[in-house]
Image 1: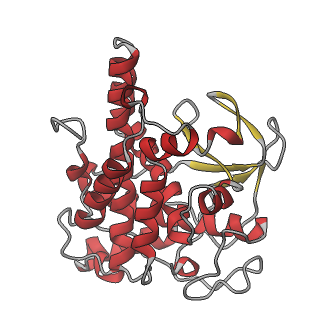
Image 2: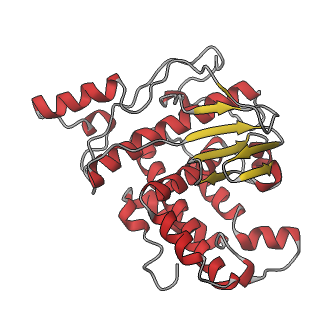
Length: 307
């Protein structure tokens, strides 16, 4: 994956190994959505009638979103080899993993801001990715790395122990940078759900359900986040940021984190009523829907009879 060509987000925080700590990583070189480049492109669009999508190779999509410019900044000092494709990050030093995460988050910001402008006529409010080691305190309580990456709607942040990248490769059998990007994009998808009110409606409905039906509803929420991750991947592919084999890496990751796959690996059998994220087949299928369409409206997992 050409992650070295992605814009670096400033919305990344490193808490190291302290559950209570927190410091902003001076990643440098990035800009928050709403920065100068975006303003320039909006002016071009309004004054000269230029479609900013032409700069991203996104013109002609179903949603027709005016997107911010996709920067192609040089590699940062912390990532000297982050050229066109970027180095593999599965076993890279922590600094490289932070750089990788910041680049992927920045690209999701650009894509979702363009889509929000097109669909809702408003800016996308970006989430913050918090990197930690071992344990972390969030607005949803204290969690350990055993919980895996998660999104906390209470503080609107994504939390990721970067050692999960190694777990994804060794334990889950899903190596590759695009597999790791899929995980980040999935959690960002939950933030999109929060910003559009889907998560609020889910929580309201889930409170009235028993555990079995609540799990079934949770699966729809998770599959929609998979589809949203695919939407981001669609535009990454259109802008030639993906390389041969990347889509296969993403599919392997979606399959590896399917409930049935995990249950078979950990306990040797599957309990359908205990699933709350979806089967491997479901997760791959909805990820593929987003990849193929690039349209969040195709990701309505709540309206289909069987997701």
